[in-house]
Length: 73
Image (cartoon, rainbow, N blue to C red):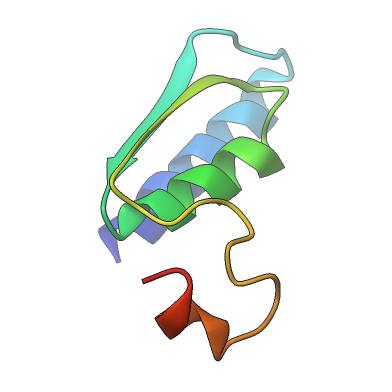
């Protein structure tokens, strides 16, 4: 729930400012890596860097829910 709140605040600040920021970074570990990589890709013009530690790579499951437990675990 806290993650959703933080993302909402981040998106709202981008909308309010109307100017791209280059000092925004996102980092995460383990299960949060999926959210971090998606956030960095979705807001690549606003987020300058992304720190990913010990988590699945972007598009690991390739849209297949069953492969999440096998290849991405």
